Image 1 (cartoon, rainbow, N blue to C red):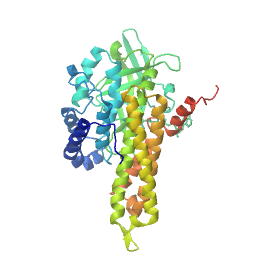
Image 2 (image 1 turned 45 degrees about the horizontal axis):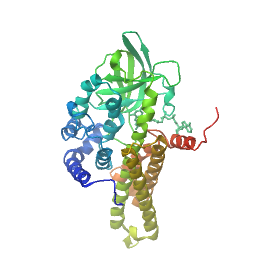
Image 3 (image 1 turned 180 degrees about the horizontal axis):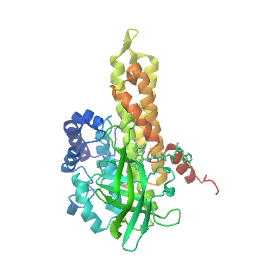
Image 4 (image 1 turned 90 degrees about the vertical axis):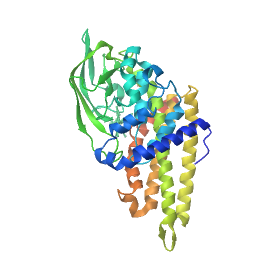
Length: 382
Ligand SMILES: Cc1cc2nc3c(=O)[nH]c(=O)nc-3n(C[C@H](O)[C@H](O)[C@H](O)COP(=O)(O)OP(=O)(O)OC[C@H]3O[C@@H](n4cnc5c(N)ncnc54)[C@H](O)[C@@H]3O)c2cc1C
């Protein structure tokens, strides 16, 4: 791996702490998490006790008041690079910031302590059975009833959908295409129910579920910020979401590369290690070059983000590049494993299945190209 200049010595100390905690608390149980289709609540709470959750939260809510994206890069790299990992960035950097940035003091006082301690696992519900890429087409509706909101609709493919104690729900609040609000729906709210825990081909330790909202009465203060401003908030936060996703994708690619390098040193054919065939050498050389280039690009984007300059276009480039690199790496690594690469008991086979979603969720590769292309002034005339 290339030397990463983004990190200071204190970040490397933090990496060491996270790595030791993961070895002790997460990875010994990962087969069980895989069977359960979710991480245990104990591990969530243990992460909270370590101070790994929503570090940016104010100290008044139990947080550290430390908004350093590099800490979440480290958590992502250490906890979700391996197959059967703990996909903690969703809580920390995809959903948490909505409440941290757009929540009122009352909303933060109510929810942040649980978010920090791990008692309250977070989910965000944008996608619906009829719409995913076209976020503005959501049909879940929140009607202003004067003294309360009335929420109706269904969501699907929601990560942390079973464990979530608080769901941020995107719902239509007016007739305009972008009239969408973000609503805070805690577990136990009457009319909020969970559907199936969905069977996925990969990411088996993550619970992904359907959610249903039937005549859910929400107080007026359940909305985040402007009831018609949710679309803008999502567009704003999606850049960070795509960047933290990029970190995860390159970390996966690196892990796939590392385990494959070990494998091809050991495995022999025609009297020699398969790694010594010119084909293997060339394949690994090409992958190493792409992975290192992806790290460099991600670190550049992270540096821009730390300076407050991460644009939606740059984040889209990062997601496009890293998810495509991850896909190519795991595919080549399966090939180098031969038949073992097709066996579930081998990590590379599981990684291959999990990696497929990186080019689909959080905005597909096609949508990333749309964003980047429009930034070049190449949008369609409508
Ligand atoms: C494991 C997993 C976890 C997820 N977690 C969450 C979550 O926590 N919260 C949440 O809200 N959602 C979540 N999603 C949903 C995810 O973000 C959507 O699946 C994704 O955005 C794609 O939407 P879709 O499935 O409706 O596909 P569609 O929008 O139906 O797209 C189908 C195909 O058409 C292509 N396409 C669509 N529009 C265009 C276009 N304009 N130009 C070219 N091609 C186009 C797409 O690229 C894709 O190839 C998750 C999905 C998965 C699989």
